[in-house]
Each structure stands twice: as structure tokens, then as C-alpha cells.
Image (tube, rainbow over all chains, first blue to last red; front, side, top):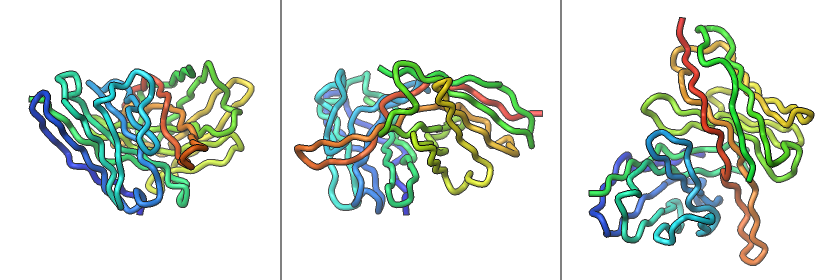
Amino acid sequence: SSELTQDPAVSVASGQTVTITCLGDSVRRHYVSWYQQKSRQAPVVIIFGENTRPSGIPDRFSGSSSGDTASLTITGAQAEDEADYYCYLRDTDSKQGVFGGGTQLTVL
Amino acid sequence: QVQLQESGPGLVKPSQTLSLTCTVSGGSVSSGGDYWTWIRQRPGKGLEWIGSIYHTGSTSSDPSLRSRVSISVDTSENQFSLRLNSVIVADTAVYYCARDRRYYNPLTGEATTYIDSWGQGILVTVSS
């Protein structure tokens, strides 16, 4: 199955650490990438590969994976991190892309 | 940095065909390693992968849409296109075109893809 499951909503106090997870059988065989979407703008990639941040993405964002679960961690969340976060992978077996359902992050 | 721009009608009647074009600049739809991709986002909902085309012309699409979706590429215009047949109100969405880029790290052996470029999105409303 290529389905990816995310918690619909997560909250974190400003300055604290939060982890957003992405669960799916395909995660065992493929790297997940993570996207931030603010106010219905086009999404922006923040993590890809094992744990690579594109230029300009703060180092408080990091990614990891274990078994069927990929995780995005924000260490020291800031108000500007309030956004929707999506995981994504392209399953080379099925040749299909799939997004997680998205997690709405609230920074308190 | 590659740039993508969607174009097409913003209003389509039910049962008709939705047709969108994505114009690519700063990169080539003929280059190897890139999947030229369509994604949509229905109002208040998450991102939904529709399908993609590789530089060889090979296409793939979401099983739930496969019978209605066609993706093609025009290398002379550096564009790729989406056609969605027999649209219904539930096809109302912001449609994005994007580049899903292959990535390989020879040091670690990582091989994956990630979406590095997106169009701004175009709202298509299905309504009579």
C-alpha cells in the first residue's frame, strides 16, 4: 500500500520541540520528503533524502525514519513555523506519488 | 532555478474536460531525471498527487483518477499538460504543476525523488 498517514493537527509551545510523523508501509523502502505550506501558498520542500535541507531552510528542521514511520522534528519551534506540513514519496514499485493527509501545526 | 506556470480556464462545466498547461522556464522537460507532475488541492483539503510524465514520455497516475486522466508533454514548447475528462463538482481544486526531481547521493547511496519546484497554482472551478 502507498498510503501515508499523518496526525491532522499538532500544537507546540513557542521554543519547544515538536515531531510530526508520517506512517506507511512504503516508508520502509523509500525516503520521504517534507513540505511546508502556509496560507494556501504553493508548498515548499524543507527536508528530502535521509535528512537534507535545501538552501535557506533553517537547521531547526530535521528528518528521520525508522521502520514504517518517518518523522519531521522542529527543534525550538517559532511562530513563523505555524503551517501545514505534508510528507510525500514516490513509490518506485507502483510508480505513483503519494502525499500524507497533512498536519496542521499550531505554535502557541 | 526552474520556474513553472499553470494556464487554462478557471471554470469548467460538469461532464466536460479540464485542460491545463504548465510552461517550464529555466529548465527542460526533456532533461533526464525529472518527473513532471500534476498535484491538486481541493478547498480545505490536503495535497493530492494526480500523475506525472517522465522525459521518455512514460506516464503514471493515481488509480482513482486513471480512467479520466491524460498527461502529455510538448518538448518544442517546453510544456506539459493535464487533461481530466468527465469532471464533476468534486474536481474543483487548485491545480499545481511541479517538478519531482530524482536525487542520488553517491556518498551515502541515497536514491529518492523530491518536489523542488512548484507553479503558483491555478483554481479550477467545476460548475454549471
